[in-house]
Length: 361
Image (tube, rainbow, N blue to C red; front, top):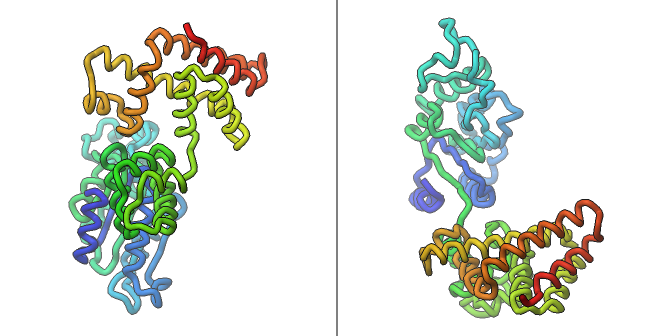
């Protein structure tokens, strides 16, 4: 199940007795946790809600919370963050630990739990609860990753709902932005979506914040690319695009001016250098895929970055030959070594690098 299916389920009033939320997109996960919290009447919420850290609380205490009857409410909510017992087992947990029959854990069948004693207790306790979870409690486990081969994962998937909150890219990211804009009562045009992603990045937290600002400040129903350009601050990534554009134009004065502005605003020179290197690596990949015959949407799929970024890279790659790009990477590595070894002051090394990159061959 993804967040869209969860959204539809909540809209129908269908609440599972147990959930497993996993994935690195914590912003979206926390928004849905807030929606579950709102299911408990505010006046009795303190009596019927427990939010704990799975690393600090024994599993028996969690089960006691989950099996407690709700007080003046239809249900209780128990949230276990950092439920690490759903993750892949560490090697030290599965080697040479005797089970109750004298066998070593590495001799056990694959579907047997082969943790040490503490792990076995946790797994068996969770499995016992999942056999018949009380309908009066909504128990939500949260973790950043899971091992889908684990028995507790398979049992929870059978008895409850597993929801993955993975990072969005490409079309899925665009669709989320459009969805969030509609929630804020706005329509956002495609060019504005592309500009917003380029300026802000793929963090849903940052995107949502900027969308809220745009929704408040825009007097029209539609959020346009012009609105984004006026109201959204540039990220380092967007500035790097413009810096590399200037290098491609062989305009070292403009490129140096932009590098100085980024440094003045607090960006470490090493970070600027890293982003420049990353951009030139992307341009080399574009050139390489183009030589293999990839074009258009095929190229976007191979690049595995946002389509807008791919289009910018395709445009920038026209300003360089493949030998120039390889030479640029060598110069960037040399500048990085000079800075780290103290042979040159950081900002001076960056400016000399830019002049060198802008030289016409």
